[in-house]
Image (cartoon, rainbow, N blue to C red; front, side, top):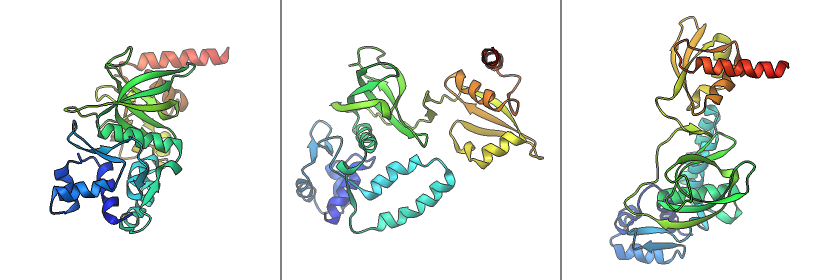
Length: 295
């Protein structure tokens, strides 16, 4: 493929709205007619009159530039040191002049789903997906996708149930990609933005006012530092003693179970600060769990 076509694909995968005017400037051509002629060479890109911009005919295109693929999936690397090493490739990938496109049909099903949902976010497209809750059959869900994130092993999407859904309209939740089946576009919307900057975990997005303060001793703190676990969005270091004997950490959570799990796993090296409103609940749950185990 020639360089201009590859450049068009990069624009189509970007966060920019690919209007004719934008592409004219982006491609550094003299007229919109030139843009239109270039696009005619790419059968899977169409001009959407309703959206007043170009979009892929299908949410899963036939090709993806190497550079775009790299940028989408580098987030799967959780370890920050390895991520920094991985980023050393970025300059080489960006400067490549040949073989700059990957065939999407050769990618894994997971990658195809991530690309599909990424394009749905950009183009504000309501989706109909088959989704399987644990222990249940596949169900049709109508969703608006806002954010895609990875824990390093599993990919998740933050979604809102659309008005077309049978129930829970407007409810936000997390979808695991390994539970998503068939995906169909339903409607492209205007005057709305699906994309959001959110941080969270498999239980949902974090709320600034939903956190607990943890006290870590030197043993647990050193482990978290060594394993680079503080790079996780769930943790924020608040205070650290000069002698390194203990640190105070703010832990964001969605379900109290998450707090119970970490205290239970690390007791007595990690404890909850005395002024926490959930301290009694968490410690009571741990006592019950221990009693069941001993019995």
